Image 1 (cartoon, one colour):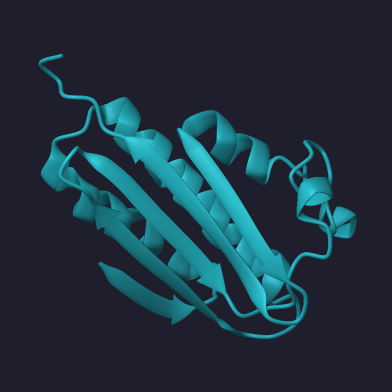
Image 2 (cartoon, rainbow, N blue to C red):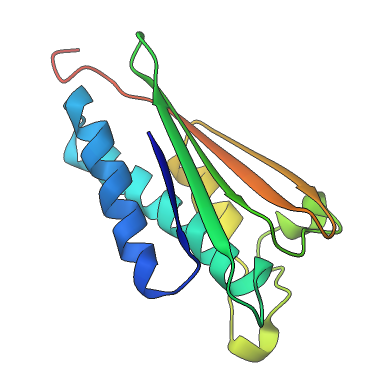
Amino acid sequence: MKLQFEGRSVNEAFSRTAVAAFIAQLDPTIEELSDIKTAVSEAVTNCIVHAYRDTLGIVYITANIFPDSHVSIKIRDKGCGIPDVKKAMEPMYTTAPEEERAGLGFAVMQSLMDRVKVTSKEGKGTTVTLERDIRSKEA
């Protein structure tokens, strides 16, 4: 599945709902679905708030389901990029303290997903890859 939309706050809810609808075909638990929706929300919010600070850019989402019920979701922007990804992923670190941001977005994503990978290039943008294995309800 591929989506692209303007990085407006109103589109954050759309993105999480669209990804949830796509993943619903795996019959995830309510908790799994909620975790994925929250992680997507955090990643998309980062694009809107940090990548495109004073401009309006496009957010790109690609979601894949693999035969073993493994889900991979990539959220990408072409914004300002992250100078130090390792630092940005530290809990409580934020580049927008004036907006009273808690700096917990990446920590939340990591706590909800099996794997989180962040790649970024200054002036080119950032890609956040979220991965989760959906457990069978019968297991």
